[in-house]
Structures are given as structure tokens and as C-alpha cells.
Length: 572
Image 1: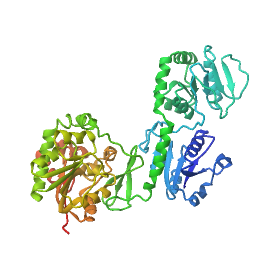
Image 2: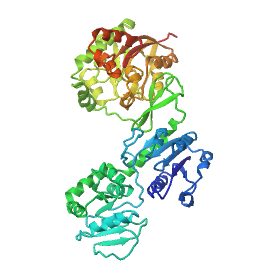
Image 3: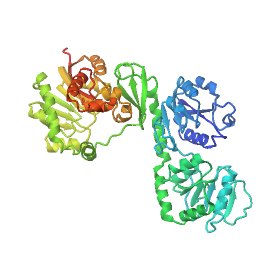
Image 4: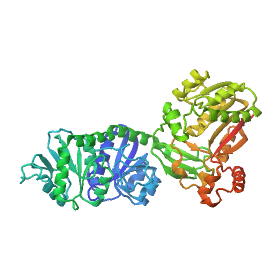
């Protein structure tokens, strides 16, 4: 089994949440990986815990771990840089600048800074650490879990002692209570051995453990920071506020309103379904399995390792090759695109103002323009259209006299092709299609190739199916066009299902490897208004003369944000 090193800590600013959560994860995944715990702090109590394997920080390199997971709230960036030389690094629930240097950054619990240096936001991979899950019972007492802050607990007692129709259990040193509705219980691992009807705590793991178990949670914050966190999660938790700022009588009335209103409580309980530790564990394992691909990352086109991370997404990181300027993704969770009818109806209409079928006139005209170029090179033969959508290109190709065949992953779209347009279209993925050697004269793919994660593998199959002297024609975004080069927000808007955005230069590098030569290149999406916006030149926006000059210049320098090209296979 592969070794994983977990760096965390316990006590002081860390509390018990980080170590308990990571021990929970390690226990759940122990049949797949060997876990060793460590801490940057050589005096950490972790090294006294005989229930886990540990090693000192300076011994991690000797362990040669497959992965390092850092769950320590805030760590000096220099340590992440050091660890990156040893292994891939995942950071969990960090609040510091060190996130910029990690391979993957996971927020299991919400953070108020809304950093862009985060891949996974709550609650996609939120793992809660209690081996004994809290249990809900509407008739049970209300739990108060407020840590060791005596001022906070005294404020809570001042409030709840006035709500005599409810019984409370306060986690503290067990002792006699002066109030008939309050019972004390020692802190321990068995605090959830009994059910509760609600929980009063502060923003932290206990709050999330309880709401996941459908127990209504009331937050009473020990600090302004905790209150800020509580305010951004008011759909999950009922918030009383920062204890030093709240009026006792107001808090009593507010708490009574909540505790005696089942409908209000049920709304919060329903929201708790957002959190699912079991599903989150599955995602964490998938991430860990896939992080092997993040070691020694190279450009898929020119194979350079001179790359730079440009953006983080839910399931991937976006990188830019500094040699050939290709943008490409590395995925740690499977990308998902819904190619049901929604993709071609609602989604298409939201973007273009009409459904895909309603846009048939425009799509047909586009198909004719493309076929006119193809006809000059290959006036007849057999066409394979990859990603046929609803078949408008294949329909025109058939009318142009070509023998046609298509591949379409969407069942909805392929059924339309087959049943409405009477086309020969296979409803399957590109991996599942049965490629035949030198079967096609023409293979086309209109805004499809950028969605292919394992593009070179598919390209090899395409070339295998292409006759000698056959052509491959396609359209694709230009990751090094005007927007890719100069729009500072471009990397954040590259669709997450674009596995790459190449450019004419980088495509030539890859295609030449397979004896494919570009015989036609046409820059598309050359917009003068976009040029004016990027450079703040609104005062010349309406200048038609300059617009014409820019159009010619942009096309000559491959500044179009998309392009169409035709590659021809060499004769053998």
C-alpha cells in the first residue's frame, strides 16, 4: 500500500477538530493506504499519541510518501514548498497564503475570505469526524457544547436558565446545578451517546456533525470571527450572535421563538442534507487516487514541464504551458456535463436566445460554409463527424453527396439524428466507438476536441481510421487568442469541461508527430469591440477604419478567440 503523511496538530489554536477528523479519515481508508501522522511542531502532543503511527517532520522525506495532507489551519508557506519537493500536497481548511503552493485545496468547512486558491468548497467533500453520530429526538434535552470559554458558558447559562420549559445538558466539569433545567456532563468521547432535540454550540465541527444528523443547531459565538462565520451559514444554523454583543432578554426571546417553532427547526434540519460524510469520503478517495497524475505534470502538446497553474476549479486545476502557450487541465474528480435534452434546449437557449433545433438555419449555414472549404480538398468520400450533436452538419454533408457517419454521446441528440434526420449516428463515447483502419476520407469535429481529456489517445484512433491523404477538419477555442493573452479574467472563465485550449502553434507541434500537416487555418471570433474592451479603448470603438485594420492584423497573428483548421494525413 502507498504511504500518506498527514500533518496536523492538537490543542491551543487547533483544538481537537483537526486531529480527530484526520484520524477518522485514516481509519476509514486504512485498507487502501498506510497513514503516518506528523507535525511541524516538534513538541506537539501528536507524538505522544500511541494510537497512530507518527514521524518527525524532518523524517518525512525518508518516508517517501505518495501524498502529504496538511490539516493545520495555517502553515508557513516555506513548509508547503519543502513538502512539494517530496510529494504532492493537499491542504484542508487552511486560512493562509500557503494554499497557493498546494496541488489541491479543500475547504471542508466554510471560510470567510472567499479565496480563489480553493478547489473544493463546502460541502462537496466535508468529512465530519464523529465515530458516534449524534442522534435526534424531538423530546430529548438540548445540548450545550461551548468548549472551555467560561465567559461564553456563563452567558449561555444566563439565557437558558430563563427557558424553564426546556431541559439542557451542559458539557463542563460535572457538578450540581443551581438550575432545575440544566444538568452538567463531563467532556468526553461519549457526549453523543444520548439523543438531543437541539444543540447550542459555536461555529465548528460539532455544529456540522449535528446538522448532518438533522439536529437543529443554535450558534452562540465566542469571538467576532466565529460570528462572521456564522453569518455566512445562516441557512444551516440559527444564529444568536457574538455573546459579548447580545442583549440577554433579546436572546431569550429569540431562542424561545426557535425552540418552540417546529416548522422553523425543520427548515434547518432539511438543509443539513447538504452534508454527507459517506459520499465525501468517496470523493476524498477519488481525489487521492487521481493525484498521482499531478506528479511531474507536462504539457500534453509539447511535453514541456515549464508550466504554471492559472486557476483552480471544483474538479481540476488549469495550467498554462510557458513554451507553447497551451492551456490544459488536470482532473482529480471526474468532469461531468449533462448532455440530456436540457443541454440542447434550456442551456442552449439561455446562451443564444433559442434552442439548438430553433437555431437550425444558422447552424445549417455554418455547415455549408465549412463544407465548401472541405469540398475543394475532398469533393467526395466518406465523412465521420465526431460529436454530431443534432446532426445539422451531417445532414448537409449528405446533401453534398458524401457518405456520412457520426458519433454522439447524447442519447437525446443521437435519437434526433436517427429518427428525425435519418442519419447513421452511433450513440456512444469516443472511447467506445469501434474505429476501422483507413475507413474515412474526412473526419470532422466542431467544437468537440477541447472536451476530450485523453486527446492524444483519441487522436491516434482518429488517425488510424483516416485514409492516407485524408483530412481532419475541426473548430476549437484558441487559448492563446486575444482574450487568452490579454484578458486578466480569462483563466477563471475557461469552461471546466474544456480539457484543453490549444492554439495553432501547439496543434502543429502535436499533429506533426503523427504526420498531419495544416493545409487551411482560419481565425474566428475576431471581435474589434473585444479588443477595445481589453485595452480600454472605448473612444475608438466606432472607428470602422481601425476595425478593419485590427481584423486583418488579428488574423495574421492568430489572435482570434477560436479557429477552424484542416489537417491532411501524409501519403504512405
